[in-house]
Amino acid sequence: MRWYIIANPVAGRRRASEWATTLAGALRDRGDGVDLSYTKDASSAEKLALDAVGLGVDRVVACGGDGTIHQVINGLMSASDARTGVALGVLPAGRCNDLAIALGIPRNDGRSAVETILNSAPRAIDLGRIGNRYFSTVATLGFDSEVAAYVGEGKPPRLFKGNLAYVYAVLVKLVSYRDVTVSLRGDFGEYTGEVFLAATGNTPYYGGGMMIVPPAEPRDGALDLCLVRSAPRLDVVRMITKVFSGGHVKHPSVTIHSVRKLDMSSPQPLWLWADGERITQLPATVEVIPNCLSVLTPRQVEDTQAQ
Image 1 (cartoon, helix red, strand yellow):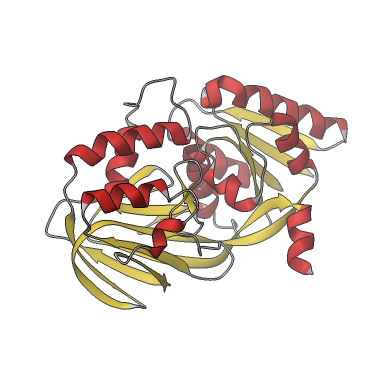
Image 2: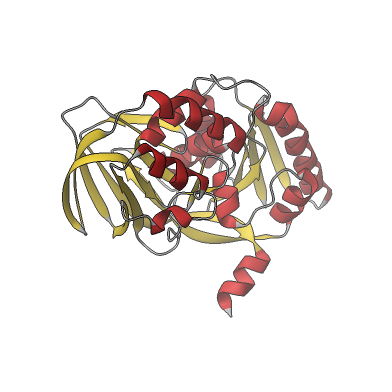
């Protein structure tokens, strides 16, 4: 077995380097071939992943946060043989690690995360796609894009990491945010009007465990849209306090829709973000690509699904 580890050396207060080195050593100890490379900037992980496929490796591990994973996935998917045996491993050492949460991969514990990869099994998952960019977790529009931009620009205080940074950003942006006008067309029908946010999930989580799209499942061949229409700000605050448990979906302004393809447009210059990364301005189309990427997942998850 030949592995290629791509690590973001500054992720997780530099713990990604430590975890990547530990994994590489464990793999070599059991006789596997290992290459370890470090990213140099925000986009180099994508090229490293593409190059890794060209080298004929069996496994590519992304060690960092969801941004690093996003880049690696897009590198794998841009390779002509990305769907013919190369599996992605996730070593979650970043700020939020929402894909890891959805896949049952341990966070905040390097030893457990390494052991999980060593004893994992490949399984195909769906991805979302916007134009030629793929995403694994949630595509955001409206308020949550404003929050993602605030966090992505590094504006929260440095001591706030993971979901604390997002909670801080929510409180800051809620003061000045104004609902946006959008037109949405998908499997569920059409909607035109003001919204607080529209989150399209391949997995339930963003922002370090906020369950914004509770029914989203990365193996069901569909995406799930959480549409939050305009509501009084006091109601919005109450919804936000319930988002970690998914309780916000009980509010009458919130609806959930299963979609395979979703067309979005707006008279305003709105941005779509996905996996915490800026993707494109509207108009845009979000669609699911079923079973397109093999990902290493904990064997106990595999066993549970098989029963």
